[in-house]
Length: 264
Image 1 (cartoon, one colour):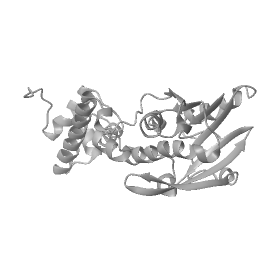
Image 2 (cartoon, rainbow, N blue to C red):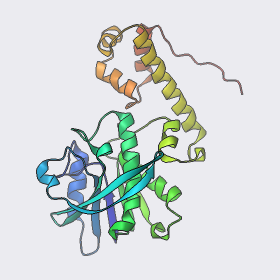
Image 3 (tube, rainbow, N blue to C red):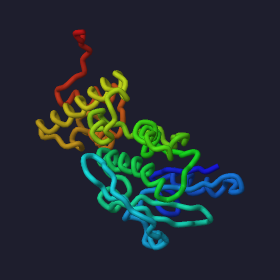
Image 4 (cartoon, helix red, strand yellow):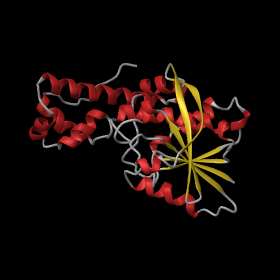
């Protein structure tokens, strides 16, 4: 059985937390007599030079993505008997750390997810199963079902998802996600669309009100009792705060939440 692990990090190439430990160690523990397990990662420019020196060029192509024709390089390395592939694009995977603000990260990993599937025919490896790890690879199953079924190469490929950290979900508004993925509106439930619109409107009002009053996030911490990192995550959309937290932040800004009737 052929299995492809798709993840945003794996030891020893790049690590920020436990995800890298799991993705870097689990493939080595699976019986190679019965399973051909390989790993696909982004090729970050912030990887240590000694790890980048292990990579060799395989191929490259250009992929339609977000109204552009983007370069996708394919690199390869073998460590401890495990075959690793890397998606190369310095526009998305450049910088001094693998993750940045959530909006940029979402675009980065939408690109990665589509590129993972697009590169498979070029490396001569057709997995029976793609094991997706955390939100960064969460769109691979969606792309597979909705964008790649016109090619017989992809027929019958299964996917499975492992969530390592439920706190981070890669949640963003539906309109942006549609623009990045090209997915039709029908793929999103009315509840998702309504929640997305509400979240975007709430974050927008929070930032607008704070800026109009000339208050920094640190000053808002002092006024509300909510820690500045929590406020920062709220404004970036990287967390879904509790209602009481939202109320505490809005109060010093002269804002409040209200339940109103919606005309049908």
